[in-house]
Length: 153
Image 1 (tube, one colour):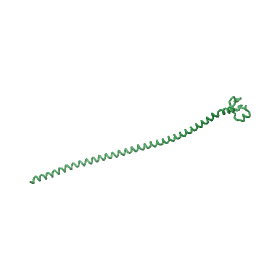
Image 2 (tube, helix red, strand yellow):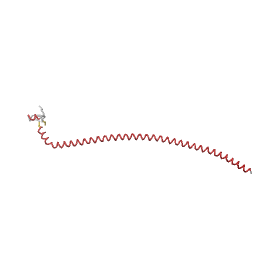
Image 3 (cartoon, helix red, strand yellow):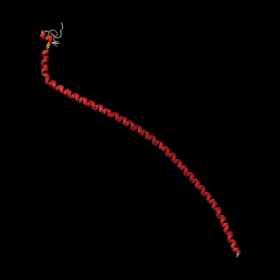
Image 4 (tube, one colour):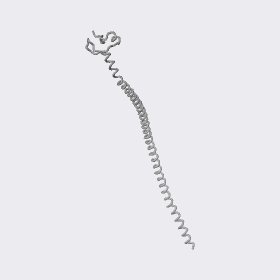
């Protein structure tokens, strides 16, 4: 009666030792796998951080280049605005000058007959040099209307 019981206890102890040994070896494998996967994850994280750092520098460089381009475009826009304002001012001056010329031209056209009469009265043909001349002084005309204005001798 005690023999089956002793055999059962002995079998339980052997089974416990076997399970312990198998579990011990298996836990070591799991530990190695975990440490290996942790190392792989750490390397992947480090690689990701390194890539992100490089990408950050590239983006900063691109942003600096864009800022330079924007500043250049702003400067160009300001210069073009100044140039446009100068052109508008010049156009206004030209329009005013044109209006003044048109006014003077209309005054000239209105006074043209009187000016032609005065011109013909003041000019005469010089007998000595056979050129058209204008009397230089009214006093010459008043004193002697036949005196030539060119005074060629």
